[in-house]
Length: 491
Image (cartoon, rainbow, N blue to C red; front, top):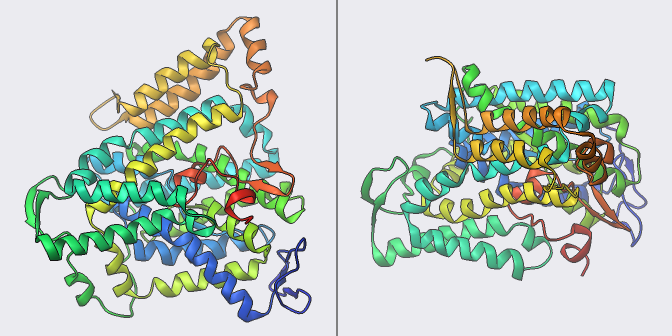
């Protein structure tokens, strides 16, 4: 399919029970409106996570548009999806910075992870998804996702929260209340709303209470305003973002590569969800989709942008509008690229107070970690079986506790990288060494690949994205306790 989208009917919103297919479009004004909704849906996550990773949020937004276009071209416009910043890499990036790495080191490691993801997609394209299920069964995938999320706890508690504990507490409370009390699309952007709320109360407290004395982002105690708008005033209205070019290190690359496990599961789940929603068989392009995400990440990080992933938030917009046209995604991508060319907009994003990020990250990081438990639950992983219990327990504690294994002055494994390797390798070793009755129980309980990995749930006409997807609950505005086809969109 090229760019010749067929006009759907009279170009107006489809009637109840009907949908606009990926190769169709509404009238261009309506398509532009749907594209604008996709921009809003991806926006909060796409700039919050670069902030947390210490990358340029304006560049991340611009490159998310470029990444989306690359993805759509690779899948031949058959999988309507938006590619925004991935949450799965936050833990690895935090570990890189904790060991002295700068932004060049970060994007270099992320670029390598993109290459690995693209190669995995290539393998899946020719060998099928089953090969990945055998290497990464749900028990292992859940453990890796859990240790990625919980490894971040010291970042939220030690860096962001102390900068302004009361703003952090207020922001956290707002996010919790908004995600549960609001309905429909507003519930899906609760993190974005929380950021705006934190911005407002920080400005209010600066006006009423004056500067705050607390640790800043480096840990040094200083007296300062919560928000300093001087950078916004000095920024130009139009111009290119500042590019950061990668440098490469094996040690740093190993810290972020484990996140590829989460992205494989996430992309597969999102493709399955889109397939059910569009009533099309997309299994033949599953490998292309995963490879497309990897190539998009390589391109984005090659100039200092953020790693990318398909977004459940935008799948939710499609479920709500019944418009699956890829034309709307090209519109959204072009809008994102245009926003990236407004430095003043980027400066406004970059001055988000640390206390606000503190309130947001305690929720987000915990949600990522708990998603590991959700993967186990959805796949009935049995922890009475020592094959699951013993090796995964070791891997999780190594990951969360940042245990280090030093080989030389130049090379060591620590935290997420070491924990993931232990979880994967030790689980397979345990399975080989275990007696026959334990292996049989593993298959019966659904923890073994033979029992199948659930990459997406469909309940009638209600589609919920992949339960093994990091960003289903790891990204702003998406709560794992709701089914998008249910109370989020059906009034």
